[in-house]
Length: 564
Image 1: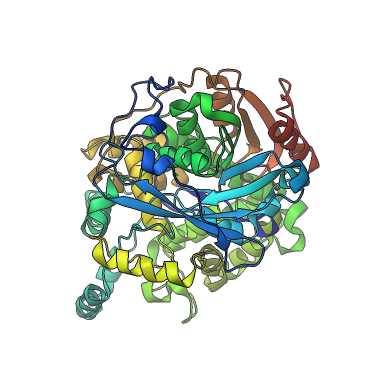
Image 2: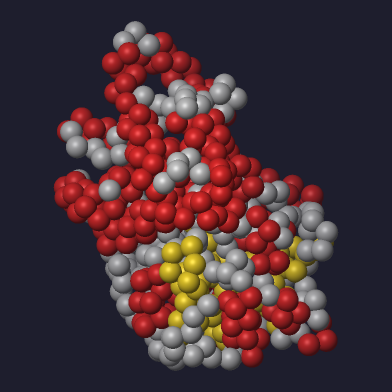
C-alpha cells in the first residue's frame, strides 16, 4: 500500500502513514534536462534567475529559542522566472555548536512529501543528528514549495462559506441516509473493491478529491513537484553562501536529494539518503514493493511483539495477534468500529477498515515507540472500543502541526500576499494536500480505470489488503495534472560518492530499494542497518551515527558490505 512518510524528531520519532501515492521520480513542468547530466549553462548565471540566486537570507530569532528563521523567494515557474509569481519559503537553522571548526551548512528534508522542514527543526530535529555533525555544521531546513508555511500554500479544503454550505447539504443527506441501515452499510469502503459498485464508488471518491484540489489550488498544482523543489534547494544553497551542498534526506527526502544530484551533480559536497525510494519503479511496482514491506512489518509485529511490547501484546502467540488484526479488518468492513464521542472518527460513525489499516500500518514506523500503544489499542478495539486506535492518528496530527516560524511583521505581509493570490489560505497543516499534489505530479499514472483494477489481484497476492488498499489509493492521481518524466535509473554523472542507508525491516521504503538506489549512483555506497522500523540515522544506534557522521564531516567512505 502506498503511503507517504514524515520524519519526526529523534526524541519522539514517529511517522504518519497516509493512503496516498509515494513519489517515485520528479516530473514537473518547465525546461527539464533530458538526462541528469550537468547543465551546459549554470542556472545561477541566467539573467532571469540572478535575482533569486543573488539572495542573502535575513536571519531573525524564531518563535522557539535557539533557532533562527528566514525567508527564501523562488520562482513559481522556472520556465518563466521573471513573470513576478513566486513562492516564499520558510527557512530555519540551528547554529553549529562548535563555530570555531564550522564546515558550513547541512540542509535536510524530513520526509513527506508534505512535511515542513522549518517547523520540524524548531521541534528539535537537530537532535537527530550526531554530536560531531552538530558541532561542524549549521543544521538547516525549509518548507518546500506549497508545503506548511510556504506562500502560497496548497489546500484542497473549501473556504469557510463553502464549508458551511457543504455541511448543510451533508446534514440533509445524512437525514435521508438514516432512513435505511442498508445505505449506511454501503458507505463502508472495502479494502479490496471487488464489485462494480465498490469500484465505481472508489473511482468517484478519488475524482472528487482531485477536483477539490484543482478548485482550491489550481494555479499552483503544476508547480509543486520534486523537480522544482530540487531547484529551490539549489537557490537555498546559494543563499546560504555555500559553493557545494551538504544534504541529508529521510524517506521522501531521498527523492528530493536524488533529483538534486541529477540536476546539479557537481554542486554536491556530500549526500546521505536514508530510507531510499527507487526512482526506476513505476506506480504499480512501487505499490507492490511498499505494500509487501508493510505486510512483512505487521508479520514482524506479530512475531516479535513480546520482545518489544511485553505484556501489552494483544495475543499470547503470533497466530493470535494475526487473527485479532484480521478480525478487526473484517468487522470494520461490515460496520465502522465504535469510538468515543470525542474521537476524531466519531463524526464518521467510527473507524472503517481503511482507518484501521492506516493506524496499524503507521505503528510499524518506530516499533520502540509505537508497538506498545498499538497493542493496547488493538486489545480494546477487539473488545468493542476503537477510541485508542483512532487516537494513534490524533496524536500524530497534533505533533505534525507547528507554528509559522516567521515574525509578526512577516505574518502580516504573508496575509496580505495570500489575500492577493488566487489560492485561499491553507489550513494550519496542509500536509495531506501537499502529499497528494507532489506524489501525483512526480510519477505518471494511467488515465483509464482498467490498469488499476488489473493491479488489484497481483497486489493482493503480494501483500493482501495492504496491496489492494494501496492500489485504490492511487486512483486520485488518475485525474491529476501530470508531469513529463517517467520512471528511470539515476542519471547523475559527475556526482561524488553518495551514501544510501537502508533498514532491513523498513515498512515504507523497503531495503531492496536502498540496495537498488545505491547501485544506480556512480560510486554509490550502501550502509545496512539490521533492524525494524523506518529509516536508521537518528534512531539506529551509535554504529549508524558514527558511520554517517564520519562521511558527512570527513567524507569518509563506507566500505562495501558495511552493516550496523
